[in-house]
Structure formats: structure tokens, C-alpha cells
Image (cartoon, rainbow, N blue to C red; front, side, top):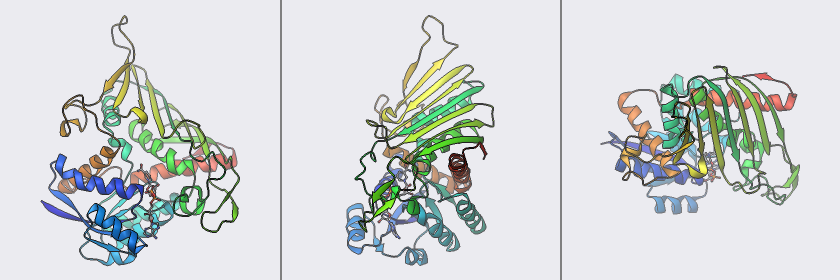
Length: 376
Ligand SMILES: NC(=O)c1ccc[n+]([C@@H]2O[C@H](COP(=O)([O-])OP(=O)(O)OC[C@H]3O[C@@H](n4cnc5c(N)ncnc54)[C@H](O)[C@@H]3O)[C@@H](O)[C@H]2O)c1
């Protein structure tokens, strides 16, 4: 096997999800390249050493620029808050490194464009971690749509609902709550949650033409986690938007962190002329499917337990009937990325694909601000 030396920046939620994927991908998928956990980069030396020891990284760095200078790093994995994606990615591209960047690609479209230009000028393989495409049930939805089983699509609707910021005492900024700070996150639920829904939608249903949106910030002031000062909250706590897809279908999207009882309820439903599909992250191994061609006396929603060997990715896992989980979407993404290196084929979603999502997010935020329809 050919080693692919990974330098990972950030060791939080995604640092763990990605590291787990690097460790497992070759055990389950036949790939020529094998990720090697070469270096972990984080600002705090003790914490970096602790993480590196626990997860098996060979070395640490405390400055990402030092990591990029190392000749023994092939690929840089950006697992930091959003405001660092652009600078790290551009410098990594200049250093000739492959880049695996967390989503959203950037703080806004202008930043994303610079990032695309940098990786394309450098000719380095690149990808963005929109991992939900690689949940087997979502991949199966893509297969059914591509096979024409839904026919003409009329409606696409998606929700991503959470409830963790209802309490006004949740602080803003700092290490744990940077998502509430526009300086670090760029936006609120739009870039954090709807970006996932938009990426999946663009993949399943094609491009979005125009949008009209509303956003709300329910808690206007919060205490800053580091300074203790009360500051205005400038992210969107909730966002809903309507859109037209290029294929003539209508889209309806909603995301909030104020839906009491919902923790990470990403759902999508697609209604076509011949059939409909729906999927729910809380029950992620199932794809619901309604086929109008079924005999009318038994016609109804089928709940497909996506665990059989001829369904996407599942032939590489356990025996039929045994399901897999959230972390496997990252393992699939790593395996597919490694295979793309073997064949020299571009990986998707790459920076250019993720830029399309960024454009929709920007149009959504601009529409909400100006209270008008916006072309994407
Ligand atoms: N694909 C997904 O489903 C998914 C899920 C969660 C988060 N994300 C994205 O992943 C990224 C990270 O989110 P997270 O939830 O892992 O955040 P997190 O807060 O858990 O971790 C962020 C990490 O970045 C580190 N960091 C911050 N500044 C740094 C610097 N200057 N140098 C080195 N390290 C630095 C922090 O110490 C921390 O280890 C974000 O862009 C987020 O949008 C994606």
C-alpha cells in the first residue's frame, strides 16, 4: 500500500470523526493508498499530545504554518472553525498539499472563490466533508433518482432542526460556542446546518436558480465565553427559505436551533411524478420509498432497511440486516477519496462543488436581509 501522510489541524468533534475514518477505511475498503496519522496540529501542546497519544498520531505541531512546511505531510485536513478554512487552505495549496476541508467551504462566496483558484492553480486534489452524501440510504436515494424511478421532480424539502441554543445563558464565542459568533462561523444555522441540506439537494436534484428567505435571531445578546461581556448576537438562529431548482421543481428548507425536542433532525423528502422518497438522520439506515407503479391494493410507503450487500457501501460491512451509523459516512468519504487518487478522477464534493453550496447560502442570507428574491 502507498502511504498517504495526514496532517490534521484541530482535534474537536470533526478531528475525532475524521481520525476514526482514517484508521478504519483500509480495513473495510480495498484501496491502494493508506492514510498514516503523521501529525496532529493544535495550539495547546498538552492537549495536542494527549489527543495524539490517544488516537495514534506520530507527532504534533502547535502552529499550522509549521505543519505545512513539513515534507513528510501529503494531505492537510482542516477541522478548525470556519474563519480559518480559507487561510489554511490557500497556504496548504501553495505548499503543494492535498486538502481535505471541513464544511462550509468558507465564510462566504468570495473567500470560497479564492480557495478554488488556489487549489486549481496548484493542481492539488481537494475535497470538502459534506459527509451525508455517503450515508448508504442517501446514496441509494441518488441511485433511484438517477435511474429515473421518480420521474419528473416537483418538490424537494429539507429540515435540519436542533434545540441546543434556546437557553439565553448559552454563551457566544470561545472554544465551545464559536458557532454562535459570526466572526468565527460566518453565519448561524445557514452555514452550519442548511449547508448540509443544500449540498445534498444540489447533488440529488441539481442546481438552485433563486431563493427567498427569512432569518431570525431569537436571543439578541449573549455573554462572551472568554471576556464575560454581553455582546450582540449577529448569527441567524433560524432560517427558512423557498427556492426554484433549475429542473423546475420547488424547494422548501428550514433550519433552527430552537425546535425543542429535536437534536439533529435532518430530514429530506422528494416528490416526483412516479415516486417519492424520504430520509431521516435519526433513523439513518432507512430510506422510505413510495412507488405509484405498485399494485394499488398494496401501494404504500415502503421502509427500506438499507443494509443489504447490493445497496451502496453495504457489501463492505456486516451481514445483511445489520446496520451501520453516522461515523461510517466519514469512512466512506475517506475510502472514496483514496480511490479517486488511484484513478486520478476528481473527487466530489470538491472545493468547486462546495462553492455552489456557498453561493446558495450567500443568496439566502442576502435575501433574508433585503427581504427580496435573490438569484443564486
Ligand atoms: N461534516 C460535518 O457533519 C460537520 C460536523 C461538525 C462540524 N463540522 C465543521 O468542522 C469544523 C470544526 O467543527 P468542530 O465541530 O469539529 O469544532 P470543535 O470546536 O469541536 O473543534 C475545532 C478545533 O479547531 C481547533 N482550532 C481552533 N483554532 C485553531 C488554530 N488556530 N490552530 C489549530 N487548531 C485550532 C480547536 O482547538 C478545536 O480542536 C467546522 O468548520 C464545522 O463547520 C462539520
